[in-house]
Length: 516
Image 1 (cartoon, rainbow, N blue to C red):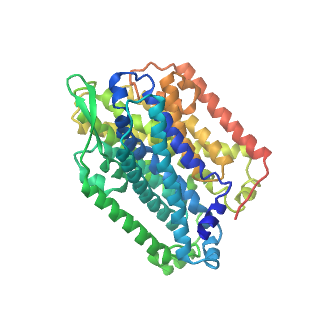
Image 2: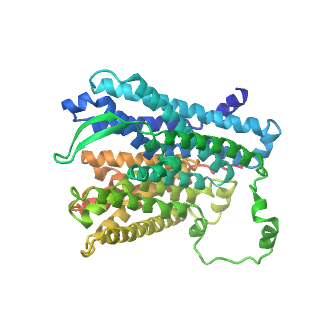
Image 3: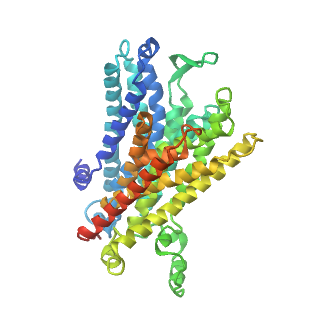
């Protein structure tokens, strides 16, 4: 308890608890928004079970990224300087590992309890019929607690092993996509059990009756629990606890983790190579051989696979060929995963400036205008690659789905204006990563921004928010949507210039702050 209190003091005024608070808030807003306008007797009658049916899906989408941000914030402070070595002089490794684990368990416990409380509040607010089954709420609480704690352990281990927190955050983003993908693969239950992000779907105990003729929900029912899923969840817990401790116990705390794997001889020989001045622009050098390319490749790929699988399973509804496939491929990417992915790009570009005394050095040979412009251009180029990769995946998935029709001529329009919208999001995320020194928090704000883009688009105010511009530029929810090009381009230019100038002003009018 003493070491746990130390961990709490370490995170004082660091905004760590804003992460679970924001997660719960957006879960409730999402559910509340989806319930608005549902006044039918069926909705009122099955409201409690409807909520328990939808919560695992929302958890699979939102929790992996949020937990990755939380674990990164808990661990990243120890990677500064020689803090790991310094801590060893004051407490044992075992106590330190258990304290970090206990801290995460407390956070996950509060998240799970807040979800149950939120369900009760929503039920009373929307006047669900009857009272919820106490055993169902308890089962949901226990499942959410254990599965989410497993994800925290996994992300904590990754954050410990890799001092570069971009690795852990990319894994969290890919985990969110994997969890969503596995939700659409009920025919492969073994994958849900093996992959930890699929455990939310594997542990579901509420099913839905769907009438194929009327295309309407008939009702909900309790399903028999999959005992195999519980065994896999328990095995993952043991592996993460024991394996995480063994990794931490044998870790080199001088700042060169597991250097022996690669051999010191190679490290020494590399240091004697002649210095070669690279031809690549400076900002592009910062993302060379970095883990952000992992998210760049995997997230659009998983989104395309989810969209194609959902399209093939709903051919009787989705009858517009390429256009229907486009909505399925791009919808989740632009609302849920593209904004935090752009946040990863932006945070990584500012990462070096926020470390050590790099701000002092960079300000001696470059102006604020040039610094921000270079970063915005690189972030825009990487987002362009993401759009082109999405287009390639769309074409490949369409051919694999059996399309023989020509590729829609509108694809270039969708990708181009989606790219313009993504540049406005890049400008916002660069500003957030500039003023917020944490690597993880701006990425979490990107996830929140994507959800906000979904809300404003549904309300018809998509031109008022950069994240809304991304979705309507891609025409993710309606490929046949008529885009107001003048208003779209005007809004995009205004947002890009606004946040570009805000970033420049912040650099010019704030003292350079350094950290060890």
